[in-house]
Length: 230
Image 1 (cartoon, rainbow, N blue to C red):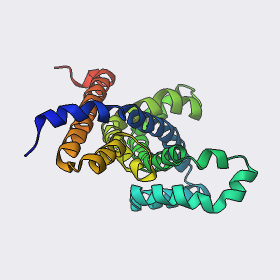
Image 2: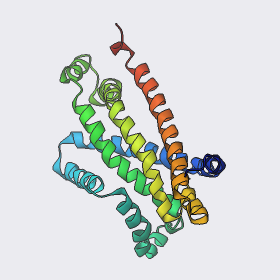
Image 3: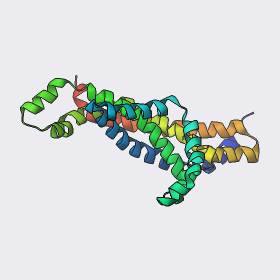
Image 4: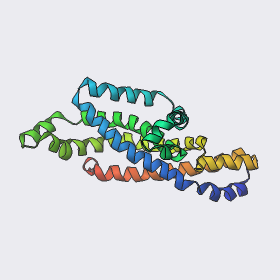
Protein backbone atom coordinates (compact mmCIF):
# COMPACT_ATOMS: atom_id res chain seq x y z
CA UNK A 1 0.00 0.00 0.00
CA UNK A 2 1.13 3.52 -0.81
CA UNK A 3 1.48 5.67 2.30
CA UNK A 4 0.38 9.28 1.59
CA UNK A 5 2.04 10.43 4.80
CA UNK A 6 5.39 9.05 3.68
CA UNK A 7 4.97 10.74 0.29
CA UNK A 8 4.47 14.12 1.96
CA UNK A 9 7.40 13.45 4.26
CA UNK A 10 9.93 12.80 1.47
CA UNK A 11 8.88 15.58 -0.90
CA UNK A 12 10.94 18.30 0.89
CA UNK A 13 13.98 16.02 0.72
CA UNK A 14 13.48 15.45 -2.99
CA UNK A 15 12.93 19.16 -3.58
CA UNK A 16 16.38 19.84 -2.15
CA UNK A 17 17.76 18.39 -5.40
CA UNK A 18 15.60 20.63 -7.59
CA UNK A 19 18.10 23.54 -7.74
CA UNK A 20 20.76 21.23 -9.18
CA UNK A 21 18.25 19.81 -11.67
CA UNK A 22 17.33 23.31 -12.82
CA UNK A 23 20.98 24.33 -12.95
CA UNK A 24 21.92 21.36 -15.12
CA UNK A 25 18.94 21.85 -17.43
CA UNK A 26 19.28 25.63 -17.69
CA UNK A 27 23.03 25.60 -18.35
CA UNK A 28 22.88 22.82 -20.93
CA UNK A 29 19.89 24.33 -22.77
CA UNK A 30 21.50 27.78 -22.92
CA UNK A 31 24.94 26.55 -24.00
CA UNK A 32 23.37 23.98 -26.30
CA UNK A 33 21.23 26.60 -28.01
CA UNK A 34 24.24 28.80 -28.74
CA UNK A 35 26.17 25.84 -30.15
CA UNK A 36 23.12 24.60 -32.09
CA UNK A 37 22.63 28.01 -33.68
CA UNK A 38 26.28 28.17 -34.73
CA UNK A 39 26.08 24.67 -36.22
CA UNK A 40 22.84 25.45 -38.04
CA UNK A 41 24.28 28.64 -39.52
CA UNK A 42 27.51 26.87 -40.51
CA UNK A 43 25.51 24.32 -42.49
CA UNK A 44 24.00 27.06 -44.62
CA UNK A 45 27.37 27.46 -46.38
CA UNK A 46 26.88 24.19 -48.34
CA UNK A 47 30.64 23.53 -48.16
CA UNK A 48 31.31 19.80 -47.66
CA UNK A 49 34.40 20.47 -45.54
CA UNK A 50 32.14 22.33 -43.09
CA UNK A 51 28.87 20.44 -43.46
CA UNK A 52 30.05 16.83 -43.19
CA UNK A 53 31.90 17.13 -39.85
CA UNK A 54 28.79 18.78 -38.40
CA UNK A 55 26.51 16.08 -39.79
CA UNK A 56 28.82 13.42 -38.36
CA UNK A 57 28.65 15.08 -34.95
CA UNK A 58 24.85 15.30 -35.17
CA UNK A 59 24.53 11.68 -36.28
CA UNK A 60 26.69 10.43 -33.40
CA UNK A 61 24.90 12.36 -30.67
CA UNK A 62 21.42 11.73 -32.07
CA UNK A 63 22.11 8.08 -32.75
CA UNK A 64 23.51 7.08 -29.35
CA UNK A 65 21.77 7.12 -25.95
CA UNK A 66 22.40 10.06 -23.65
CA UNK A 67 23.28 7.58 -20.91
CA UNK A 68 26.15 6.20 -23.01
CA UNK A 69 27.34 9.73 -23.82
CA UNK A 70 27.49 10.66 -20.13
CA UNK A 71 29.43 7.50 -19.32
CA UNK A 72 31.91 8.02 -22.16
CA UNK A 73 32.56 11.64 -21.24
CA UNK A 74 32.80 11.03 -17.50
CA UNK A 75 35.00 7.95 -17.68
CA UNK A 76 36.53 8.52 -21.10
CA UNK A 77 38.04 11.92 -20.40
CA UNK A 78 40.02 10.32 -17.60
CA UNK A 79 42.02 8.49 -20.26
CA UNK A 80 43.36 11.89 -21.41
CA UNK A 81 44.29 13.19 -17.99
CA UNK A 82 47.83 14.23 -18.95
CA UNK A 83 46.58 16.08 -22.04
CA UNK A 84 43.87 17.85 -20.07
CA UNK A 85 46.36 18.75 -17.35
CA UNK A 86 48.70 20.26 -19.94
CA UNK A 87 45.97 22.67 -21.09
CA UNK A 88 44.62 23.32 -17.60
CA UNK A 89 41.27 21.56 -18.08
CA UNK A 90 41.69 18.50 -15.87
CA UNK A 91 40.59 20.32 -12.72
CA UNK A 92 37.36 21.14 -14.58
CA UNK A 93 36.51 17.81 -16.18
CA UNK A 94 37.45 15.62 -13.26
CA UNK A 95 34.26 16.93 -11.66
CA UNK A 96 31.06 14.99 -12.51
CA UNK A 97 29.11 18.26 -12.64
CA UNK A 98 31.05 19.61 -15.62
CA UNK A 99 31.05 16.23 -17.36
CA UNK A 100 27.25 16.16 -17.05
CA UNK A 101 26.99 19.72 -18.40
CA UNK A 102 29.22 18.82 -21.36
CA UNK A 103 27.25 15.67 -22.21
CA UNK A 104 23.87 17.38 -21.91
CA UNK A 105 25.06 20.39 -23.91
CA UNK A 106 26.44 18.36 -26.79
CA UNK A 107 23.34 16.19 -26.88
CA UNK A 108 20.86 19.06 -27.01
CA UNK A 109 23.08 20.95 -29.48
CA UNK A 110 22.90 18.02 -31.91
CA UNK A 111 19.10 17.91 -31.79
CA UNK A 112 18.72 21.68 -31.65
CA UNK A 113 20.94 22.28 -34.69
CA UNK A 114 18.61 20.16 -36.82
CA UNK A 115 15.56 22.01 -35.51
CA UNK A 116 17.12 25.40 -36.25
CA UNK A 117 18.51 24.31 -39.61
CA UNK A 118 15.05 23.25 -40.74
CA UNK A 119 13.50 26.46 -39.43
CA UNK A 120 16.03 28.62 -41.29
CA UNK A 121 15.40 26.72 -44.51
CA UNK A 122 11.64 27.18 -44.11
CA UNK A 123 11.88 30.96 -44.13
CA UNK A 124 10.44 32.01 -47.52
CA UNK A 125 13.12 32.87 -50.06
CA UNK A 126 11.14 35.94 -51.04
CA UNK A 127 11.91 37.56 -47.70
CA UNK A 128 15.65 37.20 -48.30
CA UNK A 129 15.24 38.65 -51.77
CA UNK A 130 13.19 41.55 -50.40
CA UNK A 131 15.86 42.26 -47.79
CA UNK A 132 18.51 42.23 -50.51
CA UNK A 133 16.43 44.58 -52.64
CA UNK A 134 16.28 47.00 -49.72
CA UNK A 135 20.06 47.06 -49.63
CA UNK A 136 20.59 44.91 -46.56
CA UNK A 137 23.77 42.87 -46.46
CA UNK A 138 23.51 39.10 -46.09
CA UNK A 139 24.53 39.25 -42.42
CA UNK A 140 22.12 42.08 -41.68
CA UNK A 141 19.28 40.27 -43.45
CA UNK A 142 20.09 37.16 -41.45
CA UNK A 143 20.05 39.05 -38.15
CA UNK A 144 17.01 41.24 -38.79
CA UNK A 145 14.79 39.11 -41.03
CA UNK A 146 15.68 35.44 -41.32
CA UNK A 147 16.71 34.51 -37.77
CA UNK A 148 13.78 36.20 -35.96
CA UNK A 149 11.29 34.36 -38.17
CA UNK A 150 13.19 31.09 -38.00
CA UNK A 151 13.37 31.20 -34.20
CA UNK A 152 9.64 31.80 -33.98
CA UNK A 153 8.97 28.82 -36.24
CA UNK A 154 11.40 26.64 -34.28
CA UNK A 155 9.96 27.45 -30.85
CA UNK A 156 7.33 24.64 -30.68
CA UNK A 157 9.85 21.95 -31.63
CA UNK A 158 12.55 23.48 -29.42
CA UNK A 159 10.11 23.50 -26.52
CA UNK A 160 9.96 19.71 -26.76
CA UNK A 161 13.77 19.58 -26.71
CA UNK A 162 13.84 21.67 -23.53
CA UNK A 163 11.41 19.25 -21.85
CA UNK A 164 13.54 16.29 -22.93
CA UNK A 165 16.61 17.98 -21.51
CA UNK A 166 14.92 18.53 -18.14
CA UNK A 167 14.08 14.83 -18.02
CA UNK A 168 17.56 13.98 -19.27
CA UNK A 169 19.12 15.56 -16.19
CA UNK A 170 17.88 12.55 -14.23
CA UNK A 171 20.68 10.54 -15.86
CA UNK A 172 23.26 12.71 -14.12
CA UNK A 173 22.57 10.69 -10.99
CA UNK A 174 24.58 7.80 -12.44
CA UNK A 175 27.77 9.86 -12.04
CA UNK A 176 27.07 10.68 -8.37
CA UNK A 177 25.22 13.99 -8.82
CA UNK A 178 22.47 14.35 -6.24
CA UNK A 179 19.74 16.06 -8.23
CA UNK A 180 16.13 14.91 -7.79
CA UNK A 181 16.67 11.39 -9.14
CA UNK A 182 19.97 11.02 -7.26
CA UNK A 183 18.27 11.90 -3.98
CA UNK A 184 15.44 9.50 -4.87
CA UNK A 185 17.93 6.67 -5.25
CA UNK A 186 19.47 7.50 -1.87
CA UNK A 187 16.03 7.48 -0.25
CA UNK A 188 15.26 4.09 -1.79
CA UNK A 189 18.51 2.63 -0.44
CA UNK A 190 17.57 3.93 3.02
CA UNK A 191 13.85 3.10 3.13
CA UNK A 192 13.39 0.33 0.51
CA UNK A 193 10.17 2.05 -0.56
CA UNK A 194 10.80 2.54 -4.26
CA UNK A 195 7.16 2.98 -5.26
CA UNK A 196 6.45 6.00 -3.07
CA UNK A 197 9.83 7.59 -3.74
CA UNK A 198 9.54 7.37 -7.52
CA UNK A 199 5.91 8.53 -7.46
CA UNK A 200 6.99 11.63 -5.54
CA UNK A 201 9.98 12.22 -7.83
CA UNK A 202 7.80 11.74 -10.92
CA UNK A 203 5.29 14.25 -9.58
CA UNK A 204 8.05 16.82 -9.15
CA UNK A 205 9.23 16.35 -12.74
CA UNK A 206 5.63 16.46 -13.98
CA UNK A 207 4.85 19.75 -12.24
CA UNK A 208 8.18 21.25 -13.31
CA UNK A 209 7.62 20.31 -16.96
CA UNK A 210 4.03 21.57 -16.82
CA UNK A 211 5.29 24.98 -15.65
CA UNK A 212 7.92 25.03 -18.41
CA UNK A 213 5.35 24.12 -21.07
CA UNK A 214 3.02 26.83 -19.76
CA UNK A 215 5.79 29.46 -19.86
CA UNK A 216 6.89 28.45 -23.35
CA UNK A 217 3.28 28.51 -24.56
CA UNK A 218 2.94 32.08 -23.30
CA UNK A 219 6.18 32.99 -25.07
CA UNK A 220 5.01 31.38 -28.31
CA UNK A 221 1.68 33.23 -28.13
CA UNK A 222 3.46 36.51 -27.51
CA UNK A 223 5.85 36.02 -30.43
CA UNK A 224 3.15 34.84 -32.85
CA UNK A 225 0.24 37.02 -31.75
CA UNK A 226 -0.48 37.91 -35.37
CA UNK A 227 -1.51 34.29 -36.05
CA UNK A 228 -4.22 34.08 -33.39
CA UNK A 229 -6.25 37.09 -34.40
CA UNK A 230 -9.79 36.18 -35.38
